Image 1 (cartoon, rainbow, N blue to C red):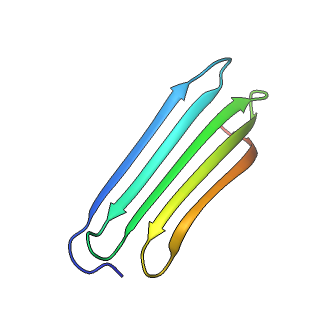
Image 2: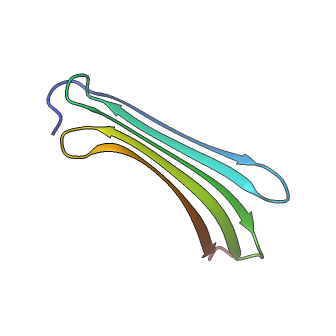
Image 3: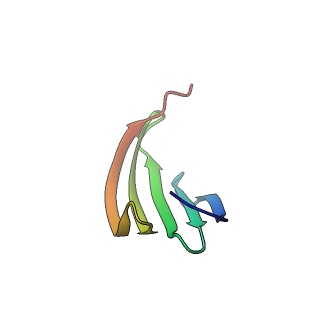
Length: 86
């Protein structure tokens, strides 16, 4: 639990790259001054395969210094999915 004052930050961005590909990024940060800090960064490059299907590659970086869960993780992943919008 966080006791006392805290400050947070959230930012999100989306950029077109090339050939209908998009790059997106999301940053979340929380600083509770004496009881811990948390940062999560997620980035994704996504490319449509057809009107409804897409493929992407993503990277997630987390840094946590709180009593409940502490440490650093970095993960790469492939995303395969579909969009149901008409």
